[in-house]
Length: 380
Image 1 (tube, rainbow, N blue to C red):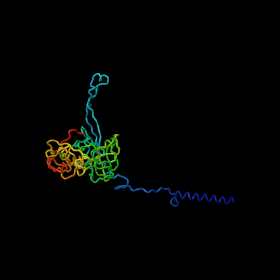
Image 2: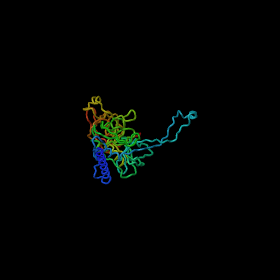
Image 3: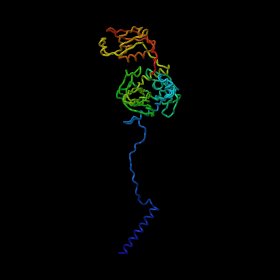
Image 4: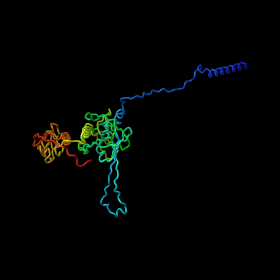
C-alpha cells in the first residue's frame, strides 16, 4: 500500500511539472478561461432629421440666428421740489443729480447675412449704446437703422458679414394648436428655448400697440425674451415675441408675438426708406355692438362707427360725417375699428380710396384722397 501511494504522488508531481512547463513555453496548447463581457446594443451616432418627441432639429436650425441685445442709456434723476430744501439736505445729504446709466436687455433675430437684426422698438428705445451678443460668442456694437413704435418693431445693424440669417416662415398658415418654440434671453440667463402651442390668432384690442394682430402662445416668454424668435417645427420664423400678460412680471402662459408677415412689411419699409409710411383719412372710430347695429338698422353687427372727423382731413373732404358707419374700404369689409385702422394704414398716400358708409339706413359710396399718417407724438 505504501508503494502504491508513493507511485501516485510521483505521478501527480510529474504531471504538474509537465503542465507548468507547457503553460510557460507553449501557452497556446492549453485553453484559457475568457473574461465575461456584457454585450449591449448601442445606437449609432448620426444626424437625424427628426426624432419623435424632440424639437432639437428646429432649435438647431433657429438658435444661431437669435441674438442677445444689451442696451444702456444715460438718465438724470429729477428731484422732487418738496425736498429742495437746504435744511433737508443738512440731515439727509445733498441729492445726487449727476447723470447715471441704466441698462436693459432683450433679444433679436438676424434677418440678413449682412448684419440686419429685427427686434422690438421698446428694446432699443432711447438707447445710447447697443451691444449684440451672437450665438458664437462674439459681441458687436450695433446702430439703429429705424424703428416703428406703432407696431413695436425696430431694425438694427452690426458690422459683420456671413451671419446665419433665419428663414422666414408663413404666419398666415399657422393654426391654433400648432407647436411653436420661443427663443430668447429671459432675465439675462442666456439663450433659452421654450415650447408651447399657438393659443389664438389675430388678437387685438389689447392696448399694447397701435396696430395689433398678435399670435397668442403659451410658450413661456419672460422679460428679456422681447424681440426674440417664435419659430415653427422647421425652425422657420413665424413671429417676433413682443409682450406678455402677467400680474407678477413672469410668464403666466399668455404671450404675444407679432406675425412675421407684418414684421417683414415693416422691416422692408424701414430698410428701404428709414421709416414706415401708412395711409390716413383723419377719423376716430369705435366698434359696433349688437345694440348699435340694431339702432342703426345695420344688416349685420360689423363696421366702425365714426365718432369724430378731423376738419379739413381726407375723410372730411370726402363727405364722411360723425355718426356714419364705415362698412367697406376699397371693397374690403370693415369688421371693427381695429380692422378699419389696419385697412386704412395699408393704403398708399396720395391715392384715392372708395369708402362705403352706412347713413340713415342706406349705403353711400364716397371717394377720399388718402393722406399720410402723422408720426405719433409720444413714443413708448
